[in-house]
Amino acid sequence: MAGLLRQGRPNLQQRRSRIGRSEEEELATLPDSMSATSSGRGPSLESLSEKNKEQDKRPETSSGPGPPPNGGLRAWQQVLGAFFLNFNTWYNRLEGSKMGLVNTFGTFQDYYASGSIFTASQSAIAWLGSIQGFLMLTIGVLCGRAVDAGYLRINLTAGIFMTVFGMMMVSVCHEYWQFFLAQGVVAGLGSGATFIPSVTVVGTYFSSRRSLAIGIATTGSSVGGLIYPIVLRRLITEIGFGWAVRVMAFIMLATLLLSLSLMRSRLPPRNSGPLVDFSAFHDPAYAIFLLSVAITYSGLYVPFFYIESYARNIGVHGDMAFYMLIILNAASILGRTLPPFIADKTGNLAILVPCTLLSAVILFAWIRVNSQNGLIVAAVMYGFISGSIQAVVPATVAFLCPDLSKFGTRLGMTLAIGGLGLLVGSPVAGAILDGQSSAGHQVYWGLLVFSGTLVFVGALLQILVRVLKVGWGVSKA
Image 1 (tube, rainbow, N blue to C red):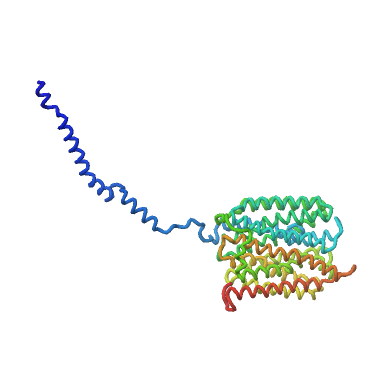
Image 2 (cartoon, one colour):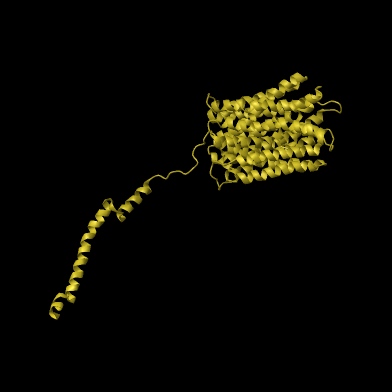
């Protein structure tokens, strides 16, 4: 029995030989398993390496936003939001507050000139609206770059606060310098922070319909120019100047908050880049266009400041003199929609140049207007044509800007230059009016010649821009 056990138990040498044979069998089967893996039954180092090389050779796909949608719910929401931003900005400049505000400053100018609150010359009062318009457009250099960098909502929030706060402060002012700070400086800065995004954001959502979309958005300023003067004038007689302005401020707050809830940036943030794109000045067409905007804006808005006083000077009495500004703003609504629609087909400069030339012609012809009917015709024509210019200028900047990610910066630069024109134009026109007028009679022909000449020179420069871009041929530009 013990012998059988000793015979069946493998000795040390036999165990070693068995281990050696099993290792050789495993090594012999390894190439087969590797070939099996490489043939698709499992991943191999060689196949993974080849796959990585193929991926490296593939072109990288862009994760950008793609082309503008050129329509859709989100795009038209931006137009609606921009409409109310314009409703509460441009109106103020002509009222004394902002460009719906701008287009209403004639009402503020007329009330201030009556001496009900403080005593100042026409030129000094015009500085209130001019400094506001200047700051509104000049601050665009900062705000345009901020929008490009992705700070749209912060920009809008700051602008809404300053705009409403400035108008609330206007309601408690009693001295000229107080109005200058509240209405001119604070509301002007707030207007700039809200106005620039109203054009920049809309421009990035549209391509072939960009002029029309921006034109519809800018009609907000004309609608504001219709509503705010009537509200202000009626409420002043019923509840006094202070509460009338406060009611305006609450209307502004409600409509501006609606804009804040709708506006959204489409392009990814451009975090690097200067506030001013100095490379743009190397483009002769854009540099000359900047000069044309500065000169044109110096004269273009003068009638909005003085049409009410002009109407009374030629014998228009009562409410009709006040409604001349309303007629001027109402006509600009159609001017901000129909010509931009045509501009999408023919090119922006093809509309901007003839409209600017016609504005100069109307200003020169205005000198001979001496009746109520004649003034109504002049107001309708000038409102339509000047509204076209205001709507097409931003779209022209987009046309001259090869990179839409820099559109906010370029537009801010353009409007800042235009702000310099606003700063100078209306006060100089007021000084000309004061210098030519006597105690019982006002003379307006010098003011109109000054404005018409500036607008005409601006039109000549725009012709030069078009020639530099497309030559003398009939081409879309």
